[in-house]
Length: 289
Image (cartoon, rainbow, N blue to C red; front, side, top):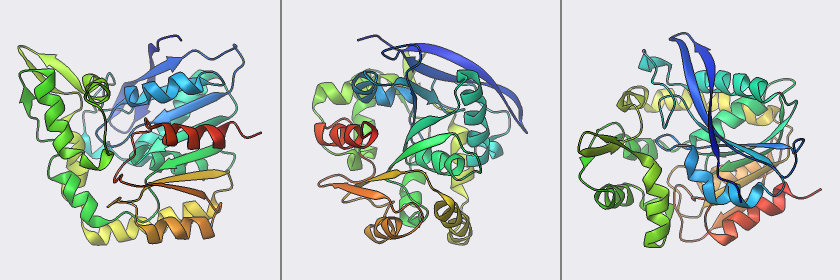
């Protein structure tokens, strides 16, 4: 199995030019189909290492670090840490990859980016996997995330940092110590003799002041995008998720692309796509015909 190669592409936003980093896993042949895997709000592209090793038997797998995270640049104006910026960056990335269509896996924020792109006319998204996110986002979950996002703690050791991430990520479900350390290692950068989280603390700015009214207003647009979506869609949900309710998930199976729903017991927000049953659900959907 190959290791991923770190690459960068230059993108444009109202804040100016910036570079987005992405991890490329070589496929089985030069013309292999492309799969783009996009992480959640405070995560980064190496979250998908285990899944990419499985799927690269069929795909050229691309795992971006969304701007402001991982090895990507930070924006000069944090007000542009928004879904439209991220969608525009992905259009630039797909142009760089020089392909006409892609399959997409998106966790939480990465799912919203995928939905925004897939709902466009002439979208390149062929098949879509949404991991624990939908058009209706529970406001209480946003409040929970806002309690820790962007606080900027530092740590003396990786183990100390991993324990902190475990406390704020209980919804991810059970993991062995080795698996959790593997997930956690790319989440930190060395600064002097301390470790800090990999992302720009300013990604919290647009979340900190969000109101229930703003969330409700955005919901209407997301449902309109969902109803416009025609790509076959798999919806994954942690059965204990506080962000994607069972009611919303059921509605997503009944309108728009009529998503295929798979739930995982004992998991909240969001499945890490590491457990065998999670990997199997994705593989079955993507490898189907």
